[in-house]
Image (cartoon, rainbow, N blue to C red; front, side, top):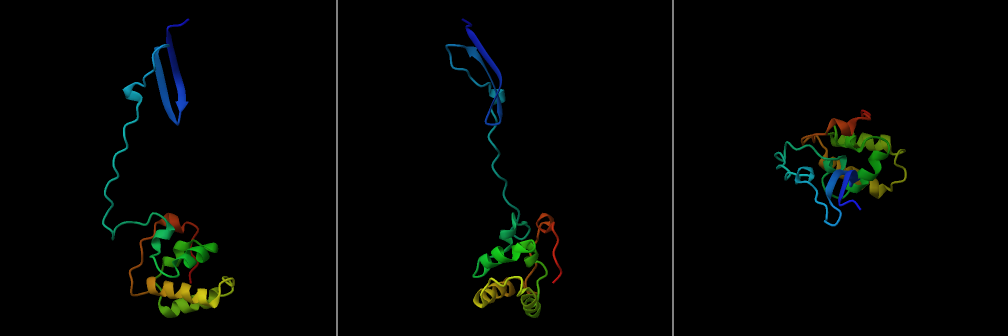
Length: 142
């Protein structure tokens, strides 16, 4: 019987493992092939400079947030909703023009959705930084 066993090229969990040794001894993975521990994540940039990780992170907590996320993204990228910092009158015009597009919402849900948008995305607040990849499909001008 062979006294030494050498297995090369065994792929396990996405890592190349080379194990050589005697058949009656457990094989050791050479230290050079053991992946180093991942470095600790670096501190994030200042809150004002950080770009959102996904579209949902553009929308602050509040009554109406989930309605926006669930409804507005059905026709266009939901991130488009956070663009433009519209006046109350502009939001009212959008509500009227979108009534047929969101006909499944009740009046109370529409009130909640637009109250949320007016409070969080208005001309008195700074526009959030929106990564270009969240707007790739384009936004319809409202």
